[in-house]
Image 1 (cartoon, rainbow, N blue to C red):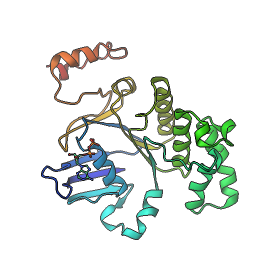
Image 2: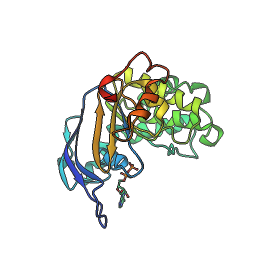
Image 3: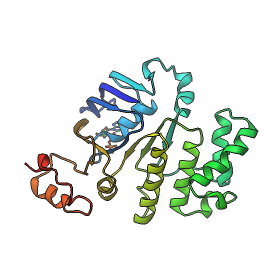
Length: 255
Ligand code: ADP
């Protein structure tokens, strides 16, 4: 569903590559966390998928589309096939919750009739049907993020990518948003999320891909835990004692 093969990217003026021979294969319906310190290359990897940046070399195939062959004028259309969620929500301030979602469908060319049918369903999914007439500044951060998620899943994308979707949210709201992403994943959408939130990664026990200095240094396929390096033994042991991990020792990792 998401395939990067030996992708390299160095930004003009930089000495070190932001991505250094990155290969990653994400299957349909996977839920993947992408973690790593600031500057590790996570956003650049996301930008490769959205084609906001082009690689210097390597192959990128997303949902069967080889991005080498997506011409500039077709990039907006390509992006509309993806669901993209941002940490700062990017809602239209002068439009209501309903209109924010409807507008995204309008741009995608959906008919008025279809839009009137789809928007309530999507708002129900994110539990915001009763807030449909409000404007973004009348909502909490978590509600705004739910509108943003509603907008990106309204077109039923096969892939949803989210760059730090909970960075501006408190703990409870973060859990709510991650729960919602999990629900969307359960409906069959492939999800790739970057985060610095150790708790949500450790609680969800999904695949965890770790980046460092532009490279993928760790790829835990199932029950992954948050670790930024080839972590020292002590720290890993402590993480394993967190609730939910005590029963799942991972001897391979603490050798
Ligand atoms: P992360 O998302 O993990 O914080 P980034 O992908 O933003 O990492 O950055 C990876 C590297 O690329 C960093 O060294 C950063 O300074 C560099 N970089 C990111 N964006 C740009 C840019 N637009 N111009 C030049 N260098 C950039």
